[in-house]
Length: 142
Length: 354
Image (cartoon, rainbow over all chains, first blue to last red; front, top):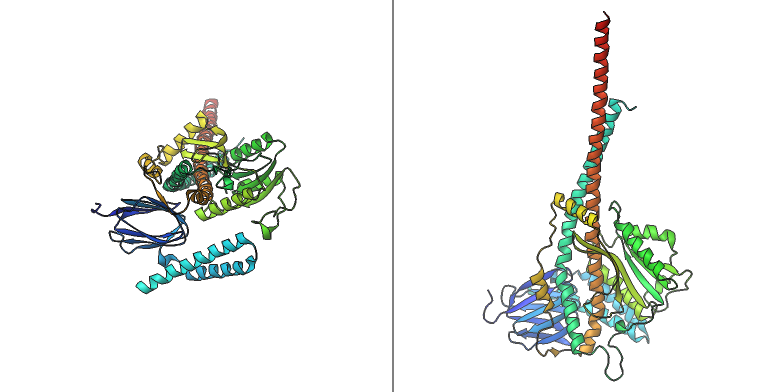
């Protein structure tokens, strides 16, 4: 079933194998920025930050999933993504994300000199922003 | 002496009980099947985390070559002066010796480690109800729960620091990872020197054991650090097998060897990976997730084991009810016959007297 240049993509969450199929390209929210994997990509291990995993081509063309944290292995012919949770854009609750964003901002304000708390607050803000982006992104495309 | 009418009433009541236990058994069987499926579905993720970690440990030295500093504080073993014990029981009773066994194992653990301070984190309402009678609840500053030094003071050697009732019912990874975060935090802050888990491990209906497992510090990734274990006895296994068969639960789990082997390949291909982040950093980021996965897995297995135990308990209850009905029916028939015989004797002797 695999086409010549299709990559085997698997998205695995703690509950189950969320998605298992073939795609031409996958874009991943790497910790230090988005990266796109095509067939023949060099072997790579990366931690994923909050953001969107998007699939292009193949049976899941155009599917996008929001992941909050993850870990990915890229091999020339396959991509395996471990994600703590995977949400479709329409599953994201905007008010919830908004509340989370506000919570993050409040923490950020309260953090003061404490580096660890500052970092934690930043992580929350980043995640909430990405989540909002993902949710709104689906609105534009439809 | 009970009359025929009394016996008939007794029989009716036992029959009603039997219906209930039979229904409960079938419900448990259905829940067990679902729990089993969930536990299997969750295996790939756990395997992948473990295998990528193992491969990272091989490639990146977990301890710095020059300074000998570990990549993550979770790898540091300290003398165990203060232990956190996570006791995984069920939320409900009627599950035979399931909860009792867990609590027995936990008590034994506490007795064995005399002179060591122990904090209890209790999962499941049943464990909480029982252990609260024996041990005081630690006074913790709720506002600063996650922060360092949230503990006010220790009043007893064994204290309850956390209760997690009701998380098993709709178990999600979030809940397990929340618990894991608390434990990791406490370990890093130095409030506890080791974290042990006591729970019922569940491989399949007839492959279960009660284990005490150390999850922190991490000794060796992918290796189970079992402190003590109690296997099923032969009788228990027979009983489980029998009740599973009558409830239509398959004994042999689905064949997951292929999927497992596939999952263990994750992150271990024989190539030079490009690391987006330094391997040591990846390692440090993955270790807490590894703990969370382990706890999630343990909770899920415990849920499956609880349903299996309940199913077996209800099966024997149903059988006992049947035995009782048989016995009562026999007594009732005998009584009735005795009455008839007596009447005939009366008639016959009356006729003979004429």
